[in-house]
Image (tube, rainbow, N blue to C red; front, side, top):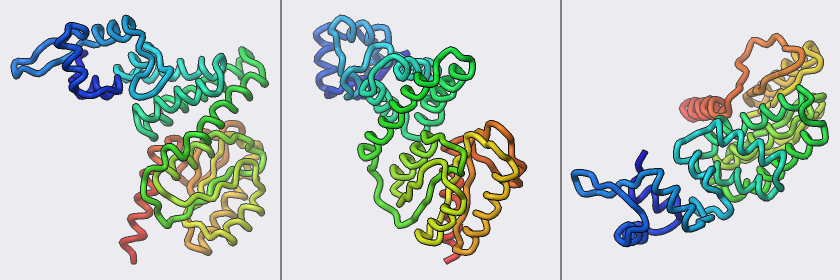
Length: 287
């Protein structure tokens, strides 16, 4: 695999002129195309990074050569494994730095759907198999939660939109990370978010709907304890939403007792965001 001068400059956090100077001095070996353009082999890039002990990759301090290799080759599986290892064995700041690199390198949706969510899933599997203790799972999860909260403002680039969302999970579901991820994505997209949090009785969600009058309600469902109660709660919330022309979206793996609901259940943040934008577009056209 080869990188162009511009691509390599971005990864190393320097100007294109610096890359050209290094290559002229023989520090960075390259090939030339028929058109006379430089192409840098990945092997030579990694060799250069190791020899010069560069630790500021892609503009982020404390990245290592393995991380750069995975990013260049778009190796989601290895990045996911690396993040899981960081969650279990590194500090919160190190976890946050790696998540930041992943978000900047792949974009918000791709990072959460293809890398971060996979790490969290594997963390749950380790706990289910008894390979890690409850406290280890909680500590690892808390590192991710704190990282997402800390990084949210850094990624709030887009122009604010006057569309209000409310996000929560029903009583009995204590999983906070999916809600934090949805909050992160919606804030990144510029939407107004009312974050209620996890484990919320449907009666309190109804009060919040009446008070806040959101255009969209998103319910995250990682674990369902009582499927009949869950079905009833969703139907009641649907009715409350319909009264104020609010649309309810439901997502999550729904482990435990699977409810019988005649509606789309989202398991991808990208798919959820895509359908949200479709609904916003439809509403605009109706005006």
